[in-house]
Length: 206
Ligand code: GLN
Image (cartoon, rainbow, N blue to C red):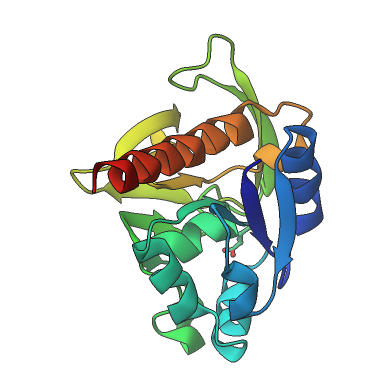
């Protein structure tokens, strides 16, 4: 059984938990650095990225999450979670200057990029690897403006990148946990499984 943590500081963490459990993962809520022990994967939910980022600093979680990732962990960030994963964030409130985040994924995101009138909407999204469109919920969503070389674009909406993967990192601007469609979560669990297989193979070789 894969052990997946859901960062539970603020935002839609319960919905992620439910969806991951429906796929057979063992899910725990992460609030303290010690909660990262033994995890194979971590989900950073949507919510308010400045709030989650600030709480992550206050709870002393930022560096432990980075260290845990460096040691082989896999991370999935949705919406605010995707913002927290990225190296460069545009559109943060001025008082934050540069907003606190994990600074892990080689991409630039623009916050609240779909404009004020259309705060939220649903769209059928073509996702590479899925044979039918995914019902994606966008809520004050960011877009991924640019990605680095090692980053694979998995879905676009009207030319804007909304799902991307870089090795053990997955980021979506939309909320796959708010639908009944578990395919994006399954994709993440497959990434995590692949990683645990790689590690086991490495251990066996040495
Ligand atoms: N607009 C939010 C932010 O910038 C993200 C919205 C969401 O996670 N649904 O943090």
